[in-house]
Length: 170
Image (cartoon, rainbow, N blue to C red; front, side, top):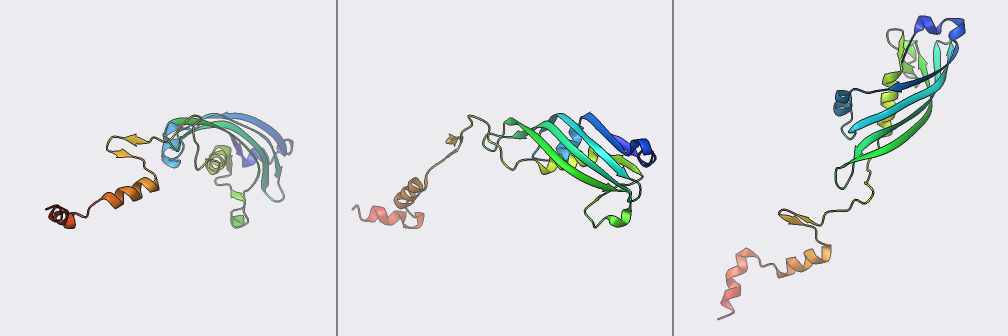
């Protein structure tokens, strides 16, 4: 989804609506968002208003989709639907970079980059798959409570003093 500076400066394009289905390259997903496994069905709808006097493009975005993230317990893929509603202001003036605007390079607005960054901000820190539970044991390990750990430590003999144990049995 791209708009050029020349297209936006036409009076008939000052206010416009858009609807687009976006697909993100798998290599981008793997390299830029390590906690994201995949993105499905990303749909972006909204409207835009361009003001030639300020060179600002205001976009109202509604982003719907489904991200696939790993389960925090089992690392299995979990579908996680999301919806992002936001208003973003873009500027063609590079001197406004400290004012909280998205600065447009090369006089072309590429909405894909903005949508990607907004999606990355929505990636949850932890998702647990329905029905997932913590494994209690595995090869060479087991999960124990603090009480079990304390009782094991009490019964454990310091290897430096192990020979003294046999001394008192005589």
